[in-house]
Image (cartoon, one colour):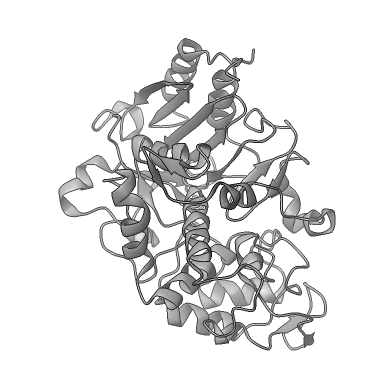
Length: 400
């Protein structure tokens, strides 16, 4: 334990350089190692040094590092007996009952066969329930185009409809693969969030606040940022595809990205905003096997089940899964990526976490006693990890 020595000075220098070259406006990061927590920032809210400085309490839209939180809440309900991992979810999600499945993922929407098994919570949390990101660009398959038209395709823009409307749109489409057959990214965690709401009769935001955020002291974590905190939320930057991918623009409500008001659907796949300290509390609870500061949130066995690779080699194969498996270094647990081999700087064997498309990455490494959290608001623009992620994790692990 604790044989890794983070190079914090090199990390600061590296992030300052990324700001100076205009790759990011700024970022805040946290490295928790043993009993020590180091927090630092670089840059400002806006490009070219404009706006407020990045601070420890800056609030970031964190996109897909929401997924492990949804997975943890689902497992809390499993422990309470409200949900089960391997029984059909049809009673609560009748829209998923008696599904039809495309004969070919690129085939016409009406060329289907009956699903060979029902959908379970495990399928949702491992993202193998049969619908998700089809990694062909631009959209070419009928199912891709139909998901985009229905507003449920994985995107920087979160779903803009009620949970019931989301399920209606999903139910109108065939599955792209049989449940349990293939890993298809993202949608399973939104559906898991809706399942949680239907089982409990509470909004996902309400339940997360009561079960996780308030007891963990995550005072700035929610699915939107209230008016009195919005001065702590930086602009979100990304590529301006109308002017070429090298141009940068700000993304806001006019682009469908609005964290200033409660959303119609609390996205369990990517809807949270948080701070480095808030997210650290969640990660510490997970690293401690479900306990923090004398309070138990999950059984150690539940955390172990969440953080083991649940996928078979067959589920990981193919172009729609490959990029999420990090060159064979990662698998997927229950709502969280799981490291199996160090093909990336952050994939220490036994670690778990994930990356977010809005410019965030967070992993927990129990073996080395390390938690790393890097938050920026610079959208990922390709399947390749951003240089900032590579820099951050290389310095966290003291690599050259």
